[in-house]
Image (cartoon, rainbow, N blue to C red; front, side):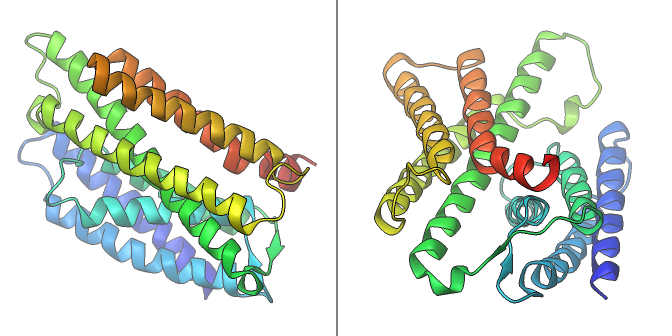
Length: 263
């Protein structure tokens, strides 16, 4: 049954992405509501798959593929919830495509990393905050890419492709900075919770994660201070957002990739 949930979720995500991409190229194309509705059913199938994949064995299977699939689910669900109020239509096909691939990876790549986080409430808090921080900052990264694309399109006078689907640049920029503020706060609190609840954040298990996460936090703080005091916009903001999310991705998934798949 778990395999069925995974395949259904992947298929629905793929169809939803196709429907929304068709909307971009044809003004009278497929209905936006249809794409969002299909993806919403995919999100339900996805979470049913995740519950069994992570909680099915004694303890919790927090393998790299399961965590990646969980991250994609949080991002996808969040983007769908805010789709009616925040301009993210152009991002949704990318998000749905990533979610589709992550579900298939979790289903088809046989890796396992069993934890017993239910025995450590502090660890539950730290992991939850870390996931929320990472997902928020990944969404900020997506908005930074959207801002970069809108800026590029505005410079291409007379280019009509996708133009009607693009939201105002200032609106996207405002959303980006709000996400960066929230994500940076969550990242700060998640690091603080690690120092409070974990025995040693600089031991062999956590050292690289701690160092890379602190480096990412410094990047995001530098970005926000630069924007506040010097009015940074455009390329500086986009570049630093990318650097920050790369550092966090290495912190969260780097060692897992080496330990669970490459070795």
